[in-house]
Length: 109
Image 1 (tube, rainbow, N blue to C red):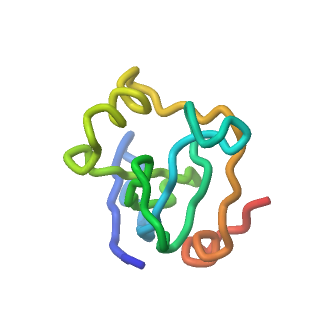
Image 2 (spheres, rainbow, N blue to C red; image 1 turned 120 degrees about the vertical axis):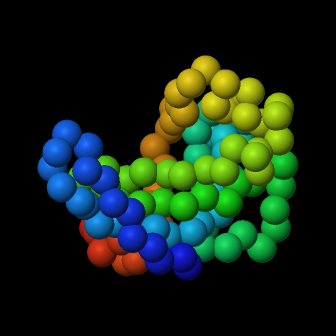
């Protein structure tokens, strides 16, 4: 877990403080054999990494859960498939694990 402060003074609202939490995700849709768009799994630390694995930082900013990814660490074909359109598309819901909601001091259903 990584904790940090994030300051956002957009629209003159003043600084907003958020906690950043590191997590591992697997891209894809569980109903489609982990293919296509979305996040199929979020874990504190995955035991087995695969080609669709990414290490990300989650943060809460203005009551929105944000995901930060280092573009340099994404293979070009994975980037093109999942982020190339300029949007990150999630076609199926994803469970927010308890470790993430606890670290963010949030309750998700």
